[in-house]
Length: 75
View 1 (cartoon, rainbow, N blue to C red):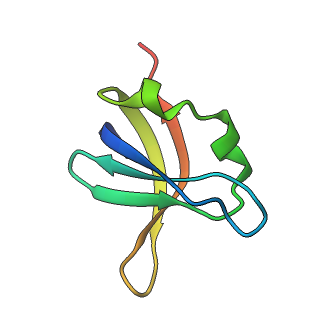
View 2 (view 1 turned 180 degrees about the horizontal axis):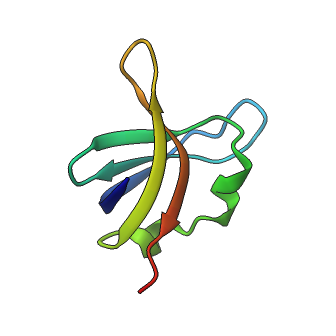
View 3 (view 1 turned 30 degrees about the horizontal axis):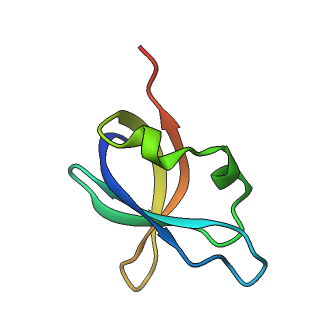
């Protein structure tokens, strides 16, 4: 899904010490990165604010949106 990053928030690390983020997207709302997702290390969240990104996500049975991938759209 192509969308725009409106904002982000750094969350507490996972129990294994890995970073987690919550992003707010245009047309989707908020989504959190999975615990211990390795691709998160490649992100520079403050550089993504206001930019178009392609995201992959899933919705849990309780309705939470979990990011599975996020890549900046290059023109």
